[in-house]
Amino acid sequence: MYSNWRVSVKPSRQVERAAATRRRIAAAARGLFASQGYTATTLAQVAEAAGVAVQTVYAVYGSKAGILRALREGLASHAEADALYERAVAEADPGRKAALMAESLRRRWEDGHDIVAIHEDAGRSDPSIRQETDQLLERRRRAFARLTRDQRAVALVDALTLPQVYETLVSHHGWTPAAYEAWLAQALEQVLSGRHPA
Image 1: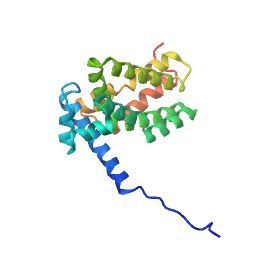
Image 2: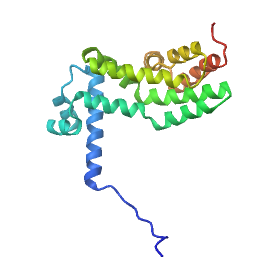
Image 3: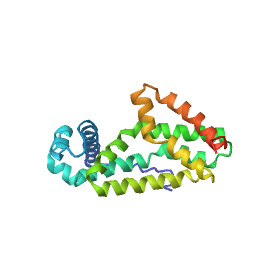
Image 4: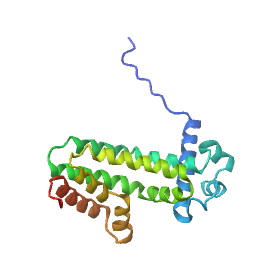
C-alpha cells in the first residue's frame, strides 16, 4: 500500500549551517597555512578570516592540528581519484593502467598538492604531525605495490607521482594539469611495461 511513497530526508538548516561553517574555517586555515606558514598562523587569525568567533574554531576543530587532520583526510579520501586508482589496479593493459593512474594523481594533486606542502611545514615543528605524515606515505607505498610486483617499478612510481613533482611542473614551470597528466601517463607506462632502467 505504501510501496510507492518516497520519503525525502533533507538535512536541517542547522546541520547545513554547521557544515558550511566547517568548510569556511578549513578554507580560511588552508589559505593562511599556505601563505604565512603553519606555525605562524594563529586560531584567532583563522577565525577572523573565516568570519567566526575563535570559540567556534575551537568547538569545531579543537586545534590547528585538528584542522590540518581534516584537510589531510579530505585529500586522502578523494572519491574520484580513489575510483580511478581502483580501476588502474584492475586494469591489465600497462598503457591503460598508466593513463588511469595519471588521471587519478592529477585529480588528487590538482585539488590538494598545497595540503601536502602544509603538512611538511607543520611536521617541522610538530613531531606528531610528522609521524602521521610518515604513516600516510607508507600507506601510499603499499597502495602502489598493488600495481606491480616489481619493487623497482614501485619505487619509480612512488618517485614520479610525488606531489612535489606536480607542484614543480605546474606551479613553477607553468605546465597545465593536463600536460602533467599526459607526461605522467607516458612515464608510468614505461615503468609499468618493464621498460625502466634495470
